[in-house]
Length: 115
Image (cartoon, rainbow, N blue to C red; front, side, top):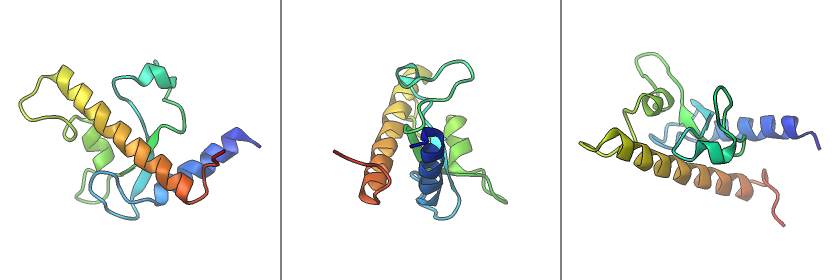
């Protein structure tokens, strides 16, 4: 099995799912985890986290910034009035929830093999 090709197919599958945050269908991409424990998933410098640690977030479109950009810009996922450090923890937890839901959808659709 070609891992790079299978990850590409998985990302294409993730892009078919509705946005994890707003639920819109048809505008998602496979967004990599950038959270608190990114280094545990291979993230560092210009390196993205492991290709399984993704969730669907919608992309920009006319008159809409998109949840992917809003999440990256700390506009969603944090707690109002909280410190930036605590917001990182809350956002990391939220994104990991989205990743787990995405993995479960992938397994249910037969895109991820289980033993």
